[in-house]
Image (cartoon, rainbow, N blue to C red; front, side, top):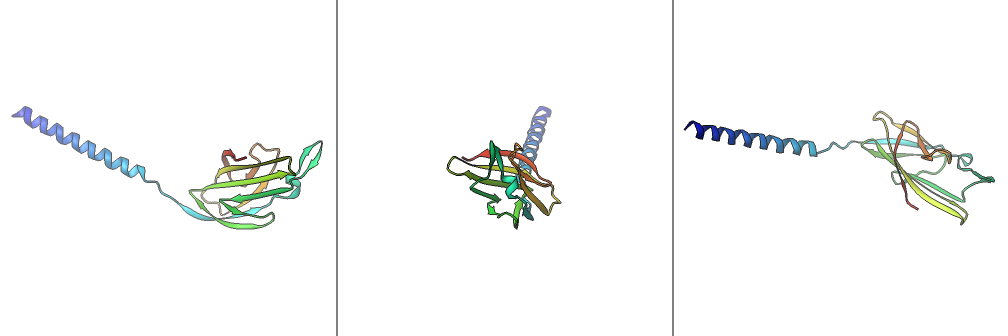
Length: 141
């Protein structure tokens, strides 16, 4: 009889542990999504876009989007940011000789409400967001 009651106790404990483990994994599987508004100021100037190869060259075409929102040079846009992550895509073309498109993903501190967007061919990431930390670069073309 004692053996039987011990087996029942072990089965009950095992079931409780299994139930607790399932509840725990369900709770940790759900992630909290936070959204906020961020004002992005495009501070990219013609001088920043100049690329020196023998002589100074400037792209015949350049555009930049933050979270799929086009932000013309010298302008600002409010964008929606999810989980403090921002995606910046830029496209460029130097005549018909050279063109490309890249996406840089950034993380921002939770308290940031404004950021400045700048550019440099001499920086490995090319695009800079004030207070942003680049995380990943993807070449599209």
